[in-house]
Length: 385
Image (cartoon, rainbow, N blue to C red; front, side, top):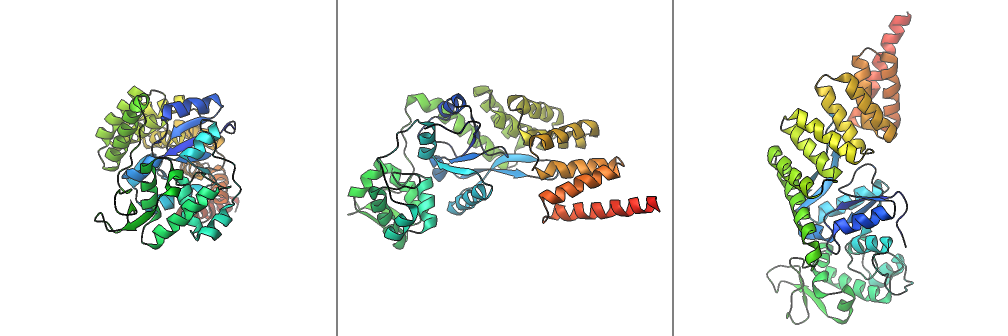
């Protein structure tokens, strides 16, 4: 099995089972790309299991003002659920770690199975949403249908735990502490307050608690990856805390370890911009673009920076490039319309606002675009009269 040619993988949370750099190398060998975080070009999103043990959740946010960033937010179960829903709504393929490794051919698929997702739900009485969330964090042998008979046994155990007060998140955080998840089929699990928490999951008899910090042995070969992932997470948290200068230093350290990381360069540029260090920010946006020429958000943010500096010709070129790279990206269309309007090129501004409304008909910015079209029509009617 191989990944689809041209696929662009993004990660949400660090991988627990495999060093990111090795995964990136294999993806590249299969003519794809792997990046931290999610951008508009991302086709497949891998949810790393360490996300369950972190307080940060990477996300991409876009602003009409021209700022787009990858940064952390508090990651409880609800945040993960919302992020999962958003990625699916965006049409991206969502993968667990094991699903990702199997897609790359780096992990052997479990034994043959024939149980559909609906059959698993019907026979276990586990909700469809919980089946999907637990599958996403590899709480079953299989990451998607068809499932196995052992998966059905696990699903019934998980349904019992949830009926007893556990959450899907508590289960997902627990199951990997006991070796391969399939080994849990022969063990009795229970949930209760034996360890001071109402959703603590433990083996029957209270001899061993399963809940707690995730424990993964990545081996010595992955230590450098651990360092980089921890450093990147620290940079995100520092950025979220508003310390732009401090975050820029941390992202620079990430780039010193991995000079090919376009996301780190992009995030550093956003931090430098937030700190008012405009020339350095422009340098790092350009650096991100050189590392990934199709990084449409970097073109868009660089255009915003140029516009703020009164360099409208440069801003116009960068926005046009962003539109060429992603014809469905509404933000650069809106900002380019604004530039053309300010320059007095009313017919072009109108054309762009109409195009924006084709891409976004419902937002606050759509209302601004609609008023822009009406204003231009009035001006052109006056001129004709």
